[in-house]
Amino acid sequence: MFIKILILTLLALILLSLTSGLFFLILDKGRSERTVKALTVRIALSVALFAILVVGYLTGHIHPHGIYPATPPAGGQPR
Image (cartoon, rainbow, N blue to C red; front, side, top):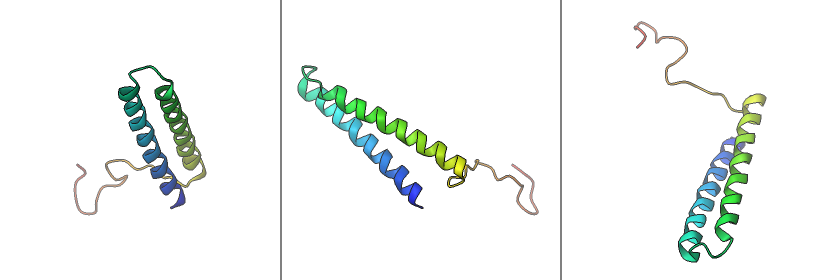
């Protein structure tokens, strides 16, 4: 459960960093480095999120699932 909360927190921080980058882009009109710093933070958070997803999958904390179940439902035809 902790890893899911961590993933959601990182996603929220990525969106916040992206929003602040847009805000600085509009506010500064390209005259400062705040936009670049905000987007650099977003990239670092995205890399961290990807690493956590890979580690979570490899350690078994995250289990992928598909759209369709692995076995057909009892008494019915598979879709």
